[in-house]
Image (cartoon, rainbow, N blue to C red; front, side, top):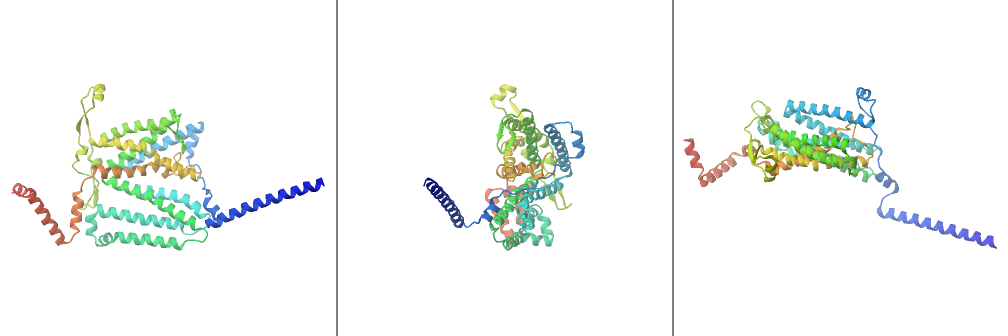
Length: 453
């Protein structure tokens, strides 16, 4: 009897456990049915993709020369040597002029786009879905056509109006751009595959966010360049200086972690980079403000069909006396200091480059951690990919463009004249008569006529 009771108890317990497991399974099935997502699709969408890690491409010469050093110091020397090489290349392309700089910006943009899309393709290709990489490059072409077409219309107006094919393309530029994009949009819809809709829309968003981050902001870099090469060189140099000095201070003095997304970043490096960048920005701005080649807007000469950088420097690049605050006066013994106004603006640029700019790098670090990769690519030994070097530059480019539009740029007479010349003759006469009446009412026109006489 005792054995029968024990056996019956065990049977009852097993029945209860089985019933509980069936209830959990049924609840899980109900949740799946309610959400409308199958187990397979959930695994596809939630799984972290395996992105192939690129091999170490450090030159064999450097590997042999630094073979006796620890990995920490070996990495320091590799980064240092390659940094000097990149800075030398930067000076070289500045010497070649604005046209070469624009081409380099375009090449960097394409390489950064390729590095990000390659990570996405590693995810997308594993499910054998069509057209993702093709559509990504097609959208890149469409967006570049739109932005560079706008730039050509703005800065090459006379050339565009002189050539009939360019004039037609300029007139219908936005319609052509929209048609190109709409074609890609329809191609994407036709490429949708059953059971992978969510993943495909995810990758569609991936491509568009990449275009927003890379292409749009590289276009702003070119606009900054047209304002004067100093607006291109100083911000980029400040980001480079902050990157180098933050690394140096962090390498030798770093003890306190700054942010979990990037464990190697320290408060010592962050603070040291900030003060170093401020000083560097002021000094570089002082040197460059004295040369017309750097401060004059980049303009297209219609007679020679080439870019020219020549003008009478604005007040922003004329030395002026500034009274020092009483605190600094008591320390230095100076009552005034002679500076270029641009040097004051450089403090704002340097501050952004050293305080907010690094958050572009933190954003990139978070992105790389999400896909369990160290670098975007291995293009530059010790530094990773091109995107690893330009993650802060794109954020800086947007700030500089907004800063110029908000605090520097005024009405541009040449662009106003370009727009007037594009009007019909009767519209031009109407504007002329309106302007003449306005100047006469202000009492300026008779004075101008007497001066001319």
